[in-house]
Length: 165
Ligand code: PNS
Image (cartoon, rainbow, N blue to C red; front, side, top):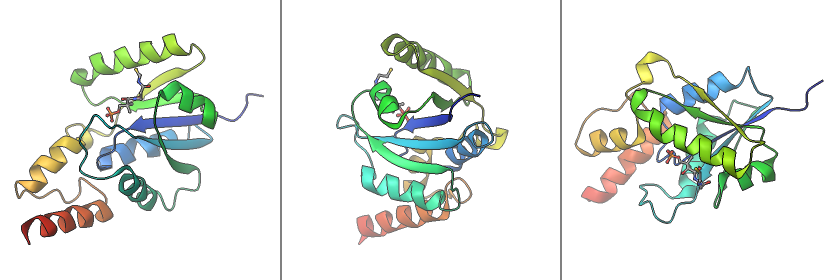
């Protein structure tokens, strides 16, 4: 019998959106555990702190007993060892995602040949959704209801109120 299979979904998640949640949901029947891993990245200017992003994801996954949310810094392959993750899972929305994802998968394989990357595709309605577009549309006054969890929407609104008061 094979051992416990733990998927690691790494990303910036600034913020998490419903496309991410769709991918997490798709992982659940395939893996014993789903670990969402939020990267501490000093170089990338983020809207939400890592702690806030972790909180938002935990809130969105409150009902998901086989999911956990962690933050990490450094190499993803090292984090995989720390949590005994077996597989990196990334969402692939369109061909435009492919080159970046392919490079990362091959680099991670070079760094640790034991680590496998698999790609899952979200439901079509999520294929155009990205954290970057959600933020852009929201702060330009567009409606992002239904694209992000309610808690994320509330936090975006709170940020906007703070910025305009
Ligand atoms: O959501 P993102 O920003 O596309 O996620 C990118 C992420 C976090 C998966 C990637 O930047 C990453 O794994 N960073 C950790 C550092 C690392 O291991 N770099 C080499 C991977 S090729």
